[in-house]
Each structure stands twice: as C-alpha cells, then as structure tokens.
Image (cartoon, rainbow, N blue to C red; front, side):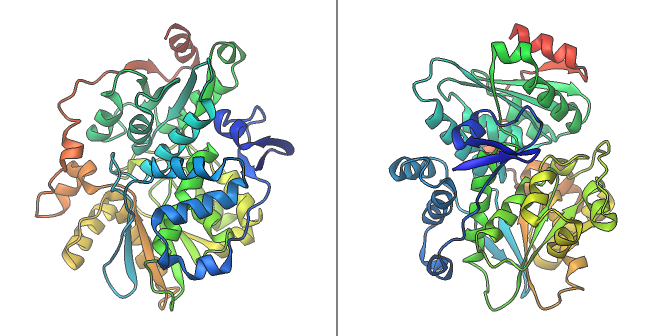
Length: 431
C-alpha cells in the first residue's frame, strides 16, 4: 500500500510510515494512491457477513498485502468487539448507534484499531512512540482507552479548558500510567495548532518519536469506513440511502466517502453542522475560509478549520461542483439542537445526544429535497455523556451507564497551560 501527501502527490510512503509519522513535513495529509473497488459479489451479499468479516474484507483490500492476513484478522478481532446497530425510527429515518464501545463514542472504532495497528508496527522497537492528540470531546477518552498500558507507547492529550463536558474531561484525565492530559486555555483549534507545530519542531523530533491519533492519521479513518458497510447491510436497499453525518473535523464523513468510493451504494451525504459553519459556507460559496471555532452544546463538532478538508476534496474529485453534488450541508444553533432532543423524544420516545440531534435537524431539512430516500443519522455518542444537556430537554431523567459513571469519582490529573507554543514545548521537554 502506498500513500501520498495531499500537499505533494510525489511524496509516497508506505502504511507503516503513514501511521507512525502521520503528519508530513509539507503539512499535508496521507491518502491512498489507489482506492480499490470491492468485489460486486461481496457487496451484494453484505448481509451474510459478520461485522468483523466486513472489516477484514475492506481493510485487506485497502492495505493490499502490507500486513499478512492472519495478523490483520488478529488486529480486527482485538479492536472491533462491539456492534454498530441500526435502529429504525420511521419509514425513512434510521439511527446508526456508534456508542456501544468502551467509552461510548464512535471514536472507539478508530482509536482501538489504530492502537492495535501501531502496536503491530512498533513491536520489537527499542524506542518509545509518543502519541500527540488534540480533542474536542470524545477523541481523548477513546484514545486513552485504546492505548492504555500499550507497550512502548505514551499518549499526550490536549483539550480546551471548559469546552468539553465534565464526563468527557473525566474520561481523558483519570487514566494515569502512559496517558497524560494537558488542559489548554483556548479552543479546540488552538489545541490542534499546538500539536501540528510540535510535529514539525526539530528540537522535539530529536527527543520524541511522534505520531497522531486524530483523524489526520489514516489509521483512524480506515476503520471508520467499516460501519458504513455494516449499517448498509441492515438497511432497505430498495430506496436511495443517504447518510447524515454530524461533522466537525470531517473524519467521519471522509470515511463514508471512502466506503462509497470502494463501491458501497450510498446515494449522497448530508453534513450536519452546528454554529461552526466553515464547511457550509464553502458549499454555499465555493470559498474555503478557516475561522476560529465557537463553543456549542455539540462540542465534538466545534471545529473552525476541519483537518480532513484536503482529503475530502481528494476523494470527492477536488472541485466545488463535485463536492456539492455529493454532499449537502445544514447548520443549526444550540437552541434548535435542544429542541430537537425534545422532539425526537416526544415523537419516537428515543433519547438522542446533541450531535445526533443536529443530524436529526439536517435530516428534516434535507428530506424536502429527497422525500423518497432512506436516511440514516449517525448517533456518535451515548446521550449519557451529555446528561446535563439532555436532562433539560426531556422529562425522563437519563440513566448514565455504569461504564460512564465509573469515571466520575476518579481524581483528575492534568497539566494546565496557556495557549502558547513556547509553554507547551517547555512542558514536553520536561515530561
């Protein structure tokens, strides 16, 4: 398998290099030189295969023999250990539940697969790998869980102070051992900028072997494509199927585009956006203009400069017209989001989290364009992770699962820094 940098198509690396050194010096993102089309007989018989069988078929086609099949099966068996069920709410509305993993967020799929893949590539190495990752909410907890006590790997997680839910903060600051948390006085984009700057710092690179666990790492994106296939096998194929994706850094939607490119019969996508409207404005105007992120109740989507935008352009065909022919986008406010949580509960007696609620609103808007389509909204996190928000919208108090409650009484451990690269670098030099 060969991958190129989106900023330099002539810069080619193998999968190991792309996974362990995820951020090229030219500041591009790695993407496969070839996206294979899956066998038609496999795609037509998806319902006959288990989730793990599907994950193997998809990843084996992508990596093209880079990893022996037996080892790849072990990687999948050790990472994809929870389901991705589709819940039908009406004739044209489905919910793809992606919160059945250990930290109850869709990031568990990518983080655990990536942890297994990195462990495979670093086995026998005498040098420690340091994962630097910025989180707007759920990535931190999923990465911490996936890499906890992984041999030869330490994790440093940056998160914006006061911009994630209390439970999300507990999920990434209470592990100890090889997991360290850094609380940054800023927003997610500031955390992400600090990480990117550190990757390119020659002083730090002489001291650390850095890699990333954000969706800028191709090892995160590959497994996120698996559940589009798993969802599709559970859906009505007699209708056009449209996936509604709550979107922030656009890793999830890019993974869906990858699945579509590999032959999955997805009609189109809807990018559901909160008040961070960078991508929506691009769809409307054809001009991409990054801007500072603003905090919302759907905090995992609070991204003003989506990292995966270059990949999205590459897989979509690179032109504005090609992107907007396959992706529509809608934006909603916090008050609309909370009203949507209430509406989903009252209409379907289903409790949805704030990110899924933004997806539900996008479904309502888009079905005016495609009234005969079948919509599937990605429910990216368990609503119990946002109980302080959800409980204000519905009459029935949400029960926080034990897997989440177990984090609440643990002591928080985090380094506090200003949004200042010099301070961050100094911290890294003394860890």
